[in-house]
Image (cartoon, rainbow, N blue to C red):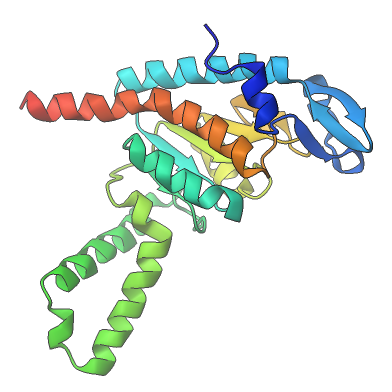
Amino acid sequence: MSVVTLSELLEAGVHFGHQSRRWNPKMFPYIFKESNGIHIIDLVQTAQLLNNACSIVKKSAISGKKFLFVGTKRQASGIIAQEAERCGAYYVNQRWLGGILTNWVTIKLRVNRLKDLEKKEEKGLLDALPKKEAIILRKELNKLKKNLNGLKNMKQPPDLVIIVDQKREITAIQECIKLNIPTICLLDTNCNPDLTSIPIPANDDAIRSIKLIISKLADFSIYLYYYYIFKLLSL
């Protein structure tokens, strides 16, 4: 049974690619036609590949694998945070800091610093400091929270990374390739399918398109959340 219908994909505008002059020829197999200078994505393939991706996500979640959602563009930022939190996954939705995966030991120190400052704020310890010092620490806290809030519970690199906008998140893609971490990626017609493990050809600019695809993947990765709940209850 398909996790999404062709009408749902159409209504969300998933089929709209980029201008034909901006395309990547490697996306040719996923393009249905060109219309008024715009490439139209083959939604039959999108539905099939999304089905495959959801199946892999479900199996991975049942096995206790950990997921990281990545999408820092304006259209994706809110969706990434919302859906990742809904299914208990990690996320990066503001800025990809180089080395999040390949230099996790160093990034983890910043995450620990974030946790430390949050605890101090909760206990009111920052209010007890001199005004100037408190302002500096709160500024640091806000910056750390903006970039690392979705990674606070991550203890090691994830097992699978889900990405919106391959070209924008190329650093994340390169780090995944270096560490042999599989990726699921929304691929618009200007992307390179060779750089991702599991491609999903789709409009990566429209909010409705991003929401539809990411929410479907989150629906299946939510098994991870229930896995941890069960694990906690069985202790």
